[in-house]
Image 1 (cartoon, rainbow, N blue to C red):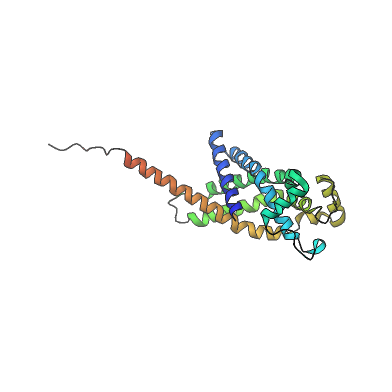
Image 2 (cartoon, helix red, strand yellow; image 1 turned 135 degrees about the vertical axis):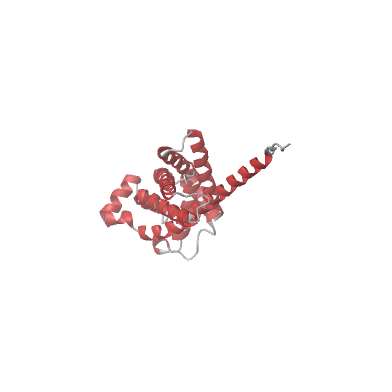
Length: 236
């Protein structure tokens, strides 16, 4: 949970600062800023997802054993580093980058478009449901844009746990997965992912947007209070 909180803070921070650096709030700049945020957070996201994948697989299926190898995510990463080095910690980094960069671009682009289209204003009586809808749909669009890459990433990160590497790289993983399971393999688990994506991203975007709106309104009030009141001329 703390890791996700940090990632969200990093993503929204990078996106906001990139927009300010680009100078104009255009749809293309929204995509670029989102893509930049997605690319930067890969450094943290990739090891976290690697640990999650290894933790979920231990003790199940072909990876079943009498005792679990990892106590928690940190212990998992430490043991992977000892056994496989820095390269092992960053297993799946390329596919994570290929997934996160465009998906976060579409993520922020979709949210920007929908909030403008819906007319989301701070004094709007329906601001919360509008933000929830825009955030939820942004999450769905971002996952739809790169979900097949996520499937490949997960397979590469799970590869080699049993001591045998089945894939020699990204293209080899794509080819073998398609040959064995057909094109449907690239959409496996998509429905459950989308069902989770809508409420999670709806809550995330609505919370961040309302917080920023509140802080900006508070700053505006303070600036107004700091300005000396204009004295009205007294009648003689």
